[in-house]
Amino acid sequence: MKSVSDTTIVWKKCKKCGKLQHPDHLRCIQCKNITFNIVKSSGDCKLLTYTILNAPPSEYRDKKSYAIGVVEYSNGLKAIGQIIRSENLKIGMKLTPEFKKLTEDLDGQKIYGVIFKPI
Ligand SMILES: [Zn+2]
Image 1 (cartoon, rainbow, N blue to C red):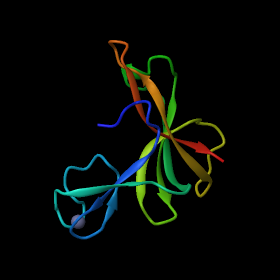
Image 2: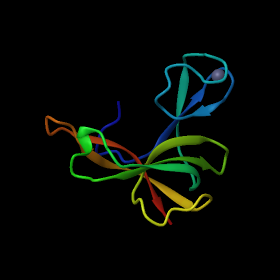
Image 3: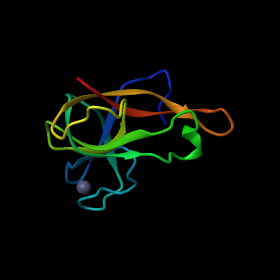
């Protein structure tokens, strides 16, 4: 578990096949191996698709809606995440990832994660 003061975005790299993936998978999405090296992410990404959530979950009670998108980094790694704004989004637009506070849970605990910001 990374510290919330560490804003470095990391990926998991499978020790068996080398597949890079979003850090939340327990098993390699290619070969099902369970051991990984942690590597620092690099580069910006492009927006592949997105949707607007007009009925957000209760943790996002301060927002009427927000955008979730699938992005692709220049090395082909795909990730899903919140986009910092929901207006004027275009498929193919460049985004930069940031690790920051996304919201607070119903107990007031801050929830951190990767959010994508249009360049
Ligand atoms: Zn693998």
